[in-house]
Length: 450
Image 1 (cartoon, rainbow, N blue to C red):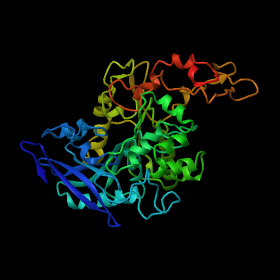
Image 2 (cartoon, rainbow, N blue to C red):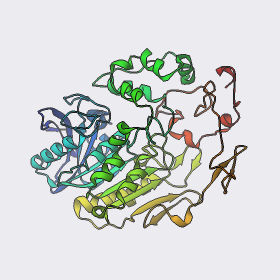
Image 3 (cartoon, helix red, strand yellow):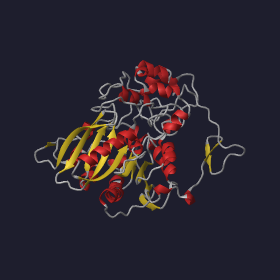
Image 4 (cartoon, rainbow, N blue to C red):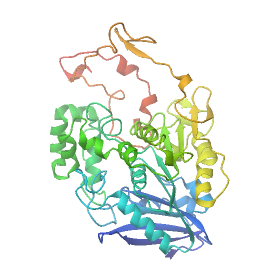
């Protein structure tokens, strides 16, 4: 334990042993005076030390202000906060495998996976933290949402609640790599940054600011990957070997896994309406679990007006759209906090099965289920690039020919690398001004006219 002068918590770092002997680096923050406290666990490839050292402060709420921490809810709730490096990343031993599938599968022939590592971690926590009440919750965004879902497979009995937020679920159908279509070239820097070094110190390098120029000069995803050495780090070859939807993707998709294996852990899935990365996953898992008898009364869904991961940050705006209030703070206060407290502390809870933000009226709705059948209206793409409420006669969709020499950028050029810093358009591009895209030529002899 490492107490800080005048701190309101004690920090512990431990190496928790897994069933195969590998140890996983784990940071534990225990509020002063904690007794019968619930445990909130996040398993991450994004550096447990960094996520729990946001500020040089003795206040738990301050050190948890980094990405993937609902700091206000965690600190106010008096929870023991646990953040762990997944196998093969940062301080943890073993070998890293991107989106490690279930053990014994074609994609993961080893005997361990995120499910077994989660089970072993929870088992250690409840046996070695006397300040806890023996109840564990999992929470995480994106990749950490994926590890949260994996924790539902053969779950430890002490896992009482899970909150997967914008989780990676199916990398082909709608999340991250393909979005049900062509491979997204902006995935390559992520592959490199995740796999090239254990501590994330090796970074994708580019001498050109405009990513459009970088990609067009390479000529193809394969050439761009090889030019940056991605043939040496693993995951790229798996993606390149499975460009179409096949059993490789199906068998490791978490909605398919949970549809087959089920779960009985109370779960709140969090979906962002303008999620630029993982817009498919949360809803897919909701569909997979909502008919399971064991999940009756235990499955919840939150649908917010946010970009990827914005639910834990400031939610007053999305790009140029102003919601008139901090929607993320409202949701954390009125939905997330009571939900966690109910299952980790037996507190009363008044949370609807579905909490959905209705843009336009800018109000939160309390619903019994999703979707609302009576509110659904089909909109069709028709010939001449028009929209209508009736399908075109004789065909289901209109035809559109894409010219690969004039790819559509997600924003006007120059296109910077992906990021969440100030003025980077990536988080909010789905609500950005698309007139530059709609006005581009439909064909061109060279990329210079795009």
